[in-house]
Image 1 (cartoon, rainbow, N blue to C red):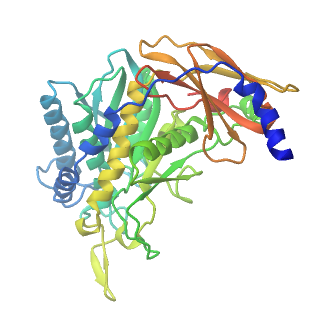
Image 2: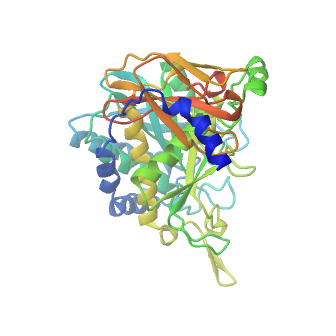
Length: 449
């Protein structure tokens, strides 16, 4: 009885505030998830495997084998998708020559294929989906042996192509970028080249979603799991300054970088729109001591995450094709569960669509409430045509995802009465008239998108 009385007394000031009803959810997001095809993804992976090897140092001139043939085919697929939507994609190559590196000793042209669906309102506000073109075997410098790379990472390219096929049937205020990146296995150079290009072009990338190995459901640990996907995200920003770090020490934010809140955003979308797929958030840039193609974007200050299977099979990664002691090694087609890959690709597409339909994430978010029973959040009011208002979020500091929220309308500040600033983490999301939302933005530099 005493506990109930205390709880009521704590919540009464908050509950007494005027209620504002948020917009409804976006039904098209269910349609997008349902439209993804495992059969089309299998056909894409099968074709990529047919090039024998896609090693970065393999042939760039052969029409049938090597990285050059694979790159040409991916470009042709993007152009065919664009033709179907009346030329709605701009397909370009973003390239540079790399040399003098441990894994690229001689001058080598590194080529990314990029397909851009420009937004109708804010062209430079972008969400980017990527997969990796290249493949490898046991010896990372072996550019001649067959390296099918069915799961690592033809599956990621297939998800990118399939997302493009489905999302080009819709129009968005924000821009969506579909990227096939090269030289991941040789040092993440494709990502580095594209991140540099994005900075030079003034792109405001709010999300980089890197798909790397999304097709294996039988782990080396003996576990079979076709319903869980991992989302890796960095904690503190790579570009954080010493001054920002000192502020974060006293105000929090080490768990609330834009990459981390992008991960929470993806998890929430899966919960709402894909009940057959669970998201395991991993609070780490990538697997222990390993890397992926989202990290060059993190290094450049862009929010980026890696999506991948939950239980890896190391017999099928970076292996020469062989059988030893009855164990088959190699990254071949039979190791890919295409229905599972389809579900991960559906999560990609739903996330991209939600972000491109949503308003710009709130900027200039600040918070105050020290030595006070109330907490006040403020932000810069946006000017997006689709903006309906804002939603304030909060959670206990030990909780991994946002647990409480309140839609507060089209305003630039809000005071949570009776919610003590010391006990929670807070954030703000922008809400569109169609119900889509931006990711939650944590106050200050630590959480700014």
